Length: 176
Length: 377
Image 1 (cartoon, chains in turn blue, orange):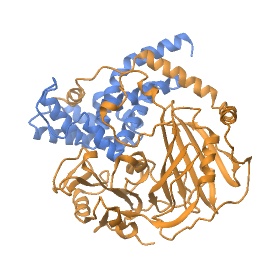
Image 2 (cartoon, chains in turn yellow, red; image 1 turned 90 degrees about the vertical axis):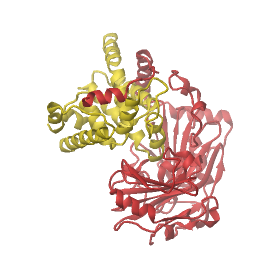
Image 3 (spheres, one colour; image 1 turned 90 degrees about the horizontal axis):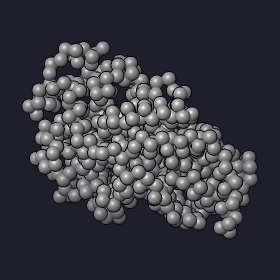
């Protein structure tokens, strides 16, 4: 890689590092795992830089796979998810708000594919087509994962007395 | 609150980044060098290391077509059986097999001088993940030996492997990149009995250790033992129609997950599938590492509550996110059914209710696996 390409790569990493870590964390529920997933994915991207048509989607796909692969292991999944997303909301002692704990606990109850779809659609702002591509699923499955996930989050947060805005645009995005 | 705000809140209070942009560029450059090298230097390194150490090399001939040689192994009708025992070979320490399936049995393998992380340790004992390079100081390996039943393994599916003969056995050997760029994966498959293949696989964070020659030392050490039926600390009272037991862990979780956590002290588990996976033409164990990768399956695990975050708890059955959990033996034992949402909660609850435990601390009291899993062979 020449110096100019490497500078471009640096700028890409600097811009993507934070969002990718959060994507991985929201998918797997563990910051350590998220850190590993993102740094591995970006290091793998380096030798392919300039030869991948959409490096943003390429690296998000790798991060998604790494995060889901980690979270799928049933026994480890429970342990790793438990590091950061407690089963029960407990009193705030570290600057983390009760509301954050309740939101994390609610998200933990959303099936992981639905949660991953929500992260890609509403946190990273990917289109439905891009979400399907990153998750390696069909457009229809991406659509249903998004819609069901959104419905589930609304139900769970309502039970916690946290209201979500009935955003018509958001609902439309889930189905379009 | 909008969905974006919900997710932003959940990920708030992010810890400091462990990797900087420069760390990643450095790792990327290393990955590029590794790709360019194409691992072609490994062969020469093997010869040098073995000669320096004064080790005895197994007989290795290129491109052999010999039939299986060596001692005769029993192939019992009941595949939930173990037909070899623990043995040592050079620096290798092959353990007793703990996983059995309709197509293979698997044992953990350890290597002197390298650490295998198959036992939970307190978080305080782990390398600090936010300190760049901290994990590099550990010399790690994850290795296992799989004995496939005759006809179950297809060595032709080992892409990029070279064919050879080791100690009179037809063999294939592969070296390549593991799950991450710093991991080297080595596979040695040899025909231990007519049509039956043994596969030693290692994932090391050193490209130089173990060597191909190291792997070949295990070939001569593998010997048959009288077939012993695998046992489990539980008995299934109910299995949904159409599902068959396909894999188990005795004193461990089933599958490679059981090998990855072999010294965690779990009691046992089993995987059921509908349809059952093919028992021929395999290149790796069913579903790789996770039950999610075996289509149409559900998983039963009986483990230590202390190892799980689904506890402590009582005998109440709780279901969430595609799995149901209960606790037995004064809360010390956790029993879980996980189906990734393939089974409804009521069905998983019925399965859990039907599980009868033996004395988990007395393996002598455990139940023959085929009986425990309602399997017919």
